Image (tube, rainbow, N blue to C red; front, side, top):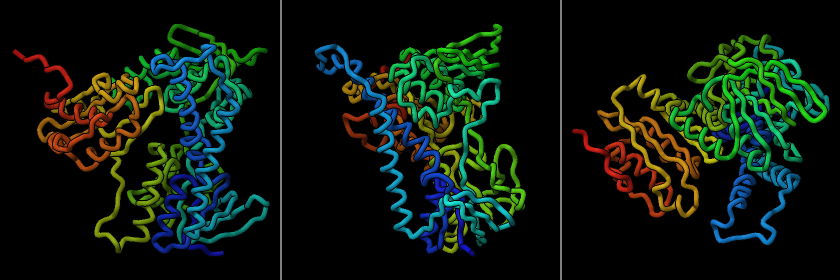
Length: 475
């Protein structure tokens, strides 16, 4: 059986690549071993954000008096089973929407496990156990990533869970210990702390979410503490011991051995490319433990075989996988429609963290600016000075921009505060299109909106913000 284009994986990289290829007139087959939508839709982005919305509502319910609301018994009921049901309903609805898009674009979907048995030959075992041999003109590997293995003694306990299991919990654990201070750990810490868990984050390296601008990372730590989330750094797990009422987690620290007691331990130490079982040895595809090696057009070392998204070991974000999928198929099948080869602008890739409050960032951090471009400007606007934020009772945080001192080109935007994940879009455009302070300053921002804070931060880089006290004059 010969196919024009086979895509291994139906996640945000694979299904977006498939749809774009179909739009270009290509006959496409997706092979997906689990559910369409991949980790992001089924076990990551979407279900986590469904939980996050529940946590947002709970946060509001915890301060009703501020909005003139009171409860007769000064309490409310929280039903984790209904939270779980809502999450499942949301995921199902979104997944069915994607499945309809694939059907509407006449994309063949085979549910099964694929492995290479030759340079462009695949053996596919479907969910019924039937085995099919497929030959493809071109193959795109988009098999994503999986949770990094936890190898310390005792980590095989049923009370040690990954983010996948955390999203299936039908109860709120009294004590949750989170191993890892990256995006996954921080998001789940905020969610379960709001649900009522006593949450502690332990991690080895000294800063939460190391990719963040340092000032934003430090402020995030402050806000986590306000939510009564505890965290310890310089901590490495040595052993996990099952007990009658939970777990004893034995750790090594700079001060010696320290033990933690918890009901559940959530392992959130990152993700690794999902290449196990592909049998890449049957091809000329070069790969390492960090992922599959690709060139600027996402072609592997084997002609006609491409790889996109998490499986290549880069920054593991769903929107990167989607963009790489689109660019990959356009470069293969639509070269005659453009003079230049399409490329992803990795300098303008946004990252959003659904913490309390949200964090979003794009472009250079201040630390990177110091290292690469010592002549830079910093502008900042506090949400406490924004009228819309005050009406929302969400005044924590700020917007910070980094700009080139000579050209006033905006190099980076960093937001911690309400609706940061939505506000970052203007920052993405500014960084991607190399816009200047003056160009943003000329654009009228509606009042009262949170977007005004972006204008204020940009203009503050020149000392021209309106809702900020004048800077002290240098003598």
